[in-house]
Length: 298
Image (cartoon, rainbow, N blue to C red; front, top):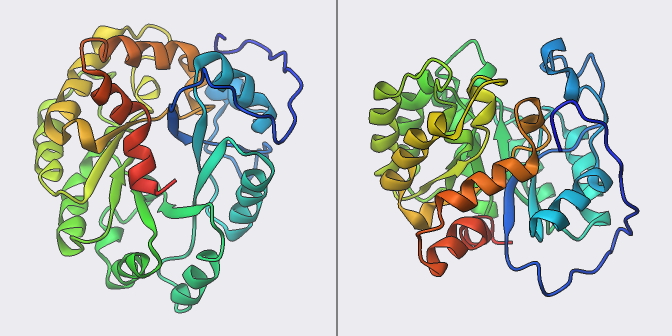
């Protein structure tokens, strides 16, 4: 499927059974939404291809075609209404193995909210859109850190969504909470289009030294030149993460449907399959599924 192309959706039963040929591939990062131009104002007009609804019935045929048999569904709106929406999707569709939601980590009642969400089997962790905060070091504020510190009590993970200028703050955060599982979304969004790598590389290597931190290889095409990127633009950044984190702390994510502004589901997963061609089967299984299963306890 090409960015901008209209979809032809195949019928889908919510409990459509898997066949044995799918394997154990897990997409550790995808989204759903019913498009609202006010709420979803981050989807600007130059991203018009994703200014529409994206729901489980739209993703399922792509998963089947690409041999993916489960996903982790990640929040895109910062509200508890979003949690209700995504947990409802997860309840209806078995291929959604886990949900990363949102809570106000700085709220006085955050522990009560976490206790509430611990009752939902598919709620696996939480995320805040730190990349969009004016306070670039918000994650180090006492109230925010307090909220993060409570996640371990309820066996929740935390997805770190940041830009490269926030990596030093992330390092301080994960050092202070060595028993909390963290995962960096989208390689911390390196400046691929500008071909800047050195500072990001140094900061990522420092972060990778913390054994409680994983990294998703996802969201790269949207940091490159949307219309003219090529795989050679991406490979140096993938190399850094693979070498720094090691095969046991990296995981595959599509960032669908956001990836459609610059690529397709099939193009992205095939690029990564080719990258890992020379790796052992054990290593391929780790990257494409087992690591996500371990991290999120799917």
